[in-house]
Image (cartoon, rainbow, N blue to C red; front, side, top):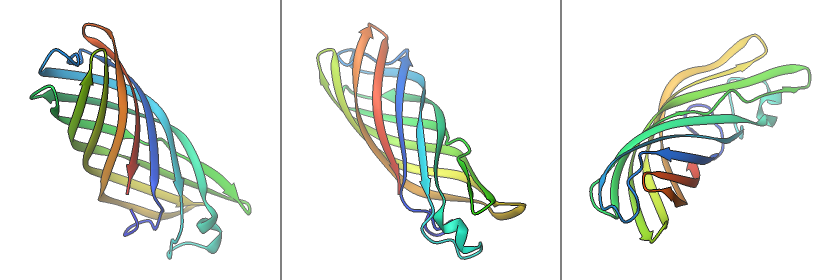
Length: 170
């Protein structure tokens, strides 16, 4: 993100209910789910806009849908669609907003612990970004960035998990 918009690290923590998830002790298989969370964006350096834009620090509700395949009890591949919402703020009388959404393929490593699991994931986020300040379209492009996260899950029923996850888009 630093290459295009000049934003700092983007943080997207998510809480999920995973329907059809492979149970921690069920070895392998397909899983899918959806989640909702909070996204925060902070602009550090944006050359194309006024200095006031560089004070932009806002958050919004984000959501994602995902599907994956657990090859073994500890290794999975996952594909997420992530919509980071539309954080906006008014700074010095200027309305500033950012809209970011895209897809992210991941490799996921899981440590099953009975009805609990701990996991880490790494991937790449391919996204479209639209950044506006007042009536100006400051940035409207596509880009990609490294993304990683970690979390833990709890098996509620045999094929229903709840997960809490924290992700950072670098």
